[in-house]
Amino acid sequence: MKKIIALFICIFMLLLPCLVRAEESPATPISSLGDMRKIAQNPSGRYELTCDIDMSATETPWTPIPFSGELDGKGHGLYNLRIRTTGEDTAETYDGNRKRYTSVFGGLFSILDGARVSNLTIVNATVFVDTDQHCFLGALAGYAQNAVIENCTVQTRNRLTLTSINAGVGGLVGFSFMSKFTDCAVDAELVFTDVNQEVLCEEFLGGVYASGCGSIDRCDVRVRGFAEVYGYAHSGGVIGMHKLQHGSDPLSRLANTTVDAEITFFEITRSRRAYCTPYVGENPGKDCRVVDCTISNFKKTEVKKAEPLSPEKCDAPRYTSEIVEPTCTEWGYTVYTCTGCGYSFKDEYIAPEHQYQVVETVPATCTEEGMETLRCVGCGDSFTRSLPAAGHRYQETVLEPTCTEAGARVFTCEVCGESYSEEIPAKGHVPGEWVTSREPEIDVEGEEQQLCSVCGAVVEARALPPIPYTHAEWIQLDSETLSLTSGSTGHLAVEVFPEDATDRTVSFTSSDEAVATARPDGTVLAEKPGIATLTCLSADGRASATCQVTVRYTTWQWVRHYVLFGWLWEE
Image 1 (tube, rainbow, N blue to C red):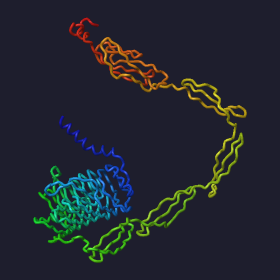
Image 2 (cartoon, helix red, strand yellow):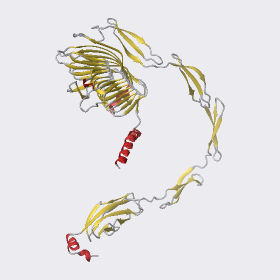
Image 3 (cartoon, helix red, strand yellow):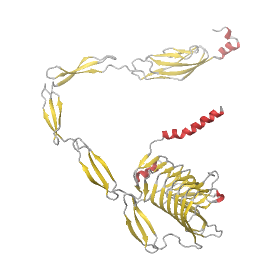
Image 4 (cartoon, rainbow, N blue to C red):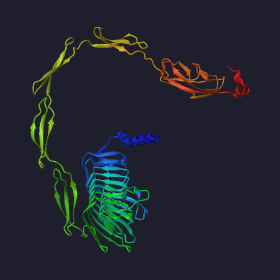
């Protein structure tokens, strides 16, 4: 028996995701920056992109929002994402000693809580935040807890300037707690600038996430990191520090991932640690297993003294710009290059777009569709589309009717000459007043006739609706329960609705007539101890109401029945 129960439980658990998906509502389409902002109104909803969206469509930078639903990019991208502040939400993060900090977060989303983000591309994100709070940044999210992120591509520049202690910069996510990252690609420039020499900060920098725990599989990571740290540096090509919190997933791993990382940093502290590796900067306890990963390039540059490490080497950089126009399949952008130090970056992206021209047209006729062929002037891609039939252009001629003969409207196409006509009825009699010829009765139609105002002939007759039989819709008793003693009577007040019901009489039935019955006037007769349900029915049987009647002995009846053995002689 236990095996059968276990089998049923297994089958139910296997079918449960299918049942849940069947009940899911359709995803809300996202096609504009305005639609993206509306996600904040329902952060647990399901959404999907229908096109690429320019996130710089307004001058106001994006404000990070929390998200716990599902977002499917459908292969589309968000581009020119500009973030200059953290979101309003906070959550707890921790350092290598599991000391907890209340932190703020910056990214497209401030917090991903149990969310799923898939098939999304983020192009040219710039997440630049200056704060005095504990803070984590990532292009997709500042914090991801139990989130699933799959098949997402991010190209971003993230910069965090801070005076606090616990902080990190990640390419995809800032702080991760038991989240999963699968089939993602990251191209990130990460800059961490600690400007407070009075406290020792905990710095975290990683291509996928900066700190926390989670699983990464089949990702491609390219990161250029720069960290100025007055404290302890934890920098990795993929993860800055992997640290399991109590109760978190012990099976975290980094697998099948390719890394191209160059990290430059200084660490100013008496007890130098200077964690910096191609995969995981610090991996205490080796809790994060590294499996089948590849290093295509890794360069670690540790500067022994404090000096500016920003990729812009000039104090007051001056940039030249070069515009690269988009093609049919490639993004356009502007390349900015510093004339002093040579640092360059791409900004102001423009989405790829075909430029189609009509090269051939087959005109439509009145009744047949036409066709036109369009070809892209850039790549030669072409397609055809139908042109709707032009339709006839009719002119109308009217032949007026007489009193006894029909007229006509004749429609003739001025293009092809096709014609058709519509009959105009004869004018006939002049309608006059309506007169009742037969009065209606209950369930029997009456009749009224319209007479010609000229000759009095019947022009038209129509039925008069019968007087309706109004059924009882519901019955209301003044009590749903009644308690009586054996041999006594009670009363139930009966209300039949609606008040204009044709037949308002009722009858009663009893579930146990030996216990209690009721008369049509509502008088309840208690026969012997027990419980009976009285059902009040309308005359037409459409409406009913019930009352539960409980009949008990009086004290004397009980004594007589049980003590004096009345049950031997009572009927």
